[in-house]
Image 1: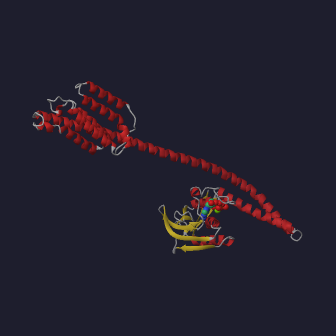
Image 2: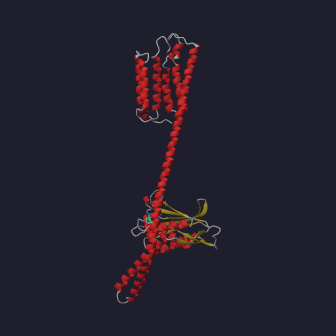
Image 3: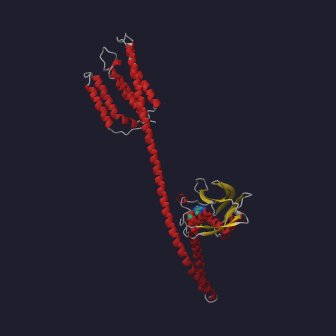
Length: 440
Ligand SMILES: Nc1ncnc2c1ncn2[C@@H]1O[C@H](COP(=O)(O)OP(=O)(O)OP(=O)(O)O)[C@@H](O)[C@H]1O
Ligand SMILES: [Mg+2]
């Protein structure tokens, strides 16, 4: 992989420039082409990072190619006219393109560039081998020398490349480690926030339980008094009877609110027995539909045959279904709609059980609420308390089941689907045996 470097001048660049200046003052000093080539090397070195950052894909190839070209020119201008260019003492200038290639490319890329650089260097054999071009003679010794130089090119390139690859690998390892640490840190912070929230909720739960308990008794007295008052004033004052009726109905409302607070805050007692879930579901559907006074609703049922029994507390389960169905009816209250209820066998987290899907054609759960819909006191309703689904979630946890909410429209933003899973009744909790459970 080719990595773009930061377009800055670093101390390595300064060192390179110093190296070029020293080369410039070494013989041959009066050869202007040599000095120009060294200046070109300097400019390329300074602009290399910029070029690579602008052209991350092709930039490194351009840089290596230009350096090879400059190296070729340099050795051609650093020999006397009586000597073949291949004899130039400046041949180590080829290490510059080779090291650059080793820095930017993988092993194969480095090998290819080294072969190309060696070929361009060896190409100076051509005039030496053709006496009609220039009259030079090359002996066997010179060939051996050339072979040694080229072998060193490969050696240096591969050593640098190994070092660069290893250092890149280390950097990547550290990066991955840093990412893992950041992720762990994020999770830890999330868990801490969750724990703080749970603490606050627990405190709130205790407070509401205490408060609700205290409110309940006076409420009973108010309700009883209102009923007695309406009995006493039965024939004398219709206005007083009406007012007493208000007191009684509002007290009922408050009383049911207090009951819900208590359900949420105090531990629930569940008597588990193997039950047919559809019977409980039918009862909940009937309860909500009977009390519904809004637009007409249609209920579509689709129950699989031969469903296994599940170990549940009938009352709590019915309450969970009522809460969900009531929410669905509320959601469709403006126009009426269809409630689809599907019950089938399913497997979740490795255990067999029954899945209940309750789906409506209402506006669906707002996206920003999806994450927190099962948290207490989350509500979008004017008269809602936001406890219905948190109670359902508590009941499902107590039954070792699960509940999740989905967008029923598959992205269209209409309709909510609640999916509940109940594990099959264990051997111990058969039709005859039952188990008592405290859900806190
Ligand atoms: N079927 C649904 N379609 C759309 N939104 C829903 C649906 N069910 C629940 N919601 C949203 O989730 C919120 C929380 O529901 P939850 O039952 O916990 O509280 P609530 O219905 O507002 O009050 P209550 O405590 O009286 O039940 C609702 O206010 C509503 O915004
Ligand atoms: Mg509700």
